[in-house]
Image (cartoon, rainbow, N blue to C red; front, side, top):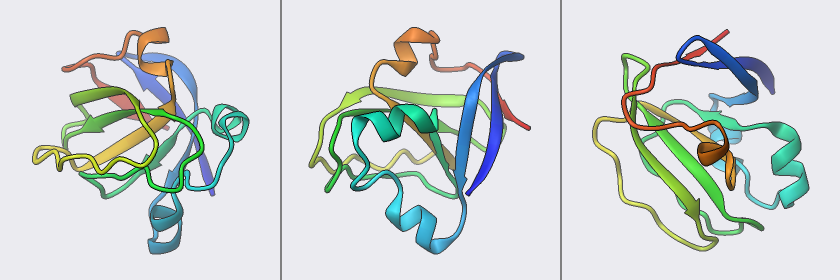
Length: 115
């Protein structure tokens, strides 16, 4: 999986993995332990506007992003075995370990960039 640097409001916060084909998008973070999820930093799923957390081993934070790379919604501590509502404005999203959104103060209208 490709690794990218994630910038929020022009500040490099972490490395993330990119899931942009059928198999990597399908698998996402399913079956990964909390430690494995933390070591990944985050997972960008592109394209994507809705997720589920079935077969996940730990809660996650989800950041939904529009085509202009602006955060349109942040869901913190999404529990395991949940089907989330579709976010219509989202073109892709990033799944993070629980607590990441709060730690980096990620909020609606922040600008994200990956390099």
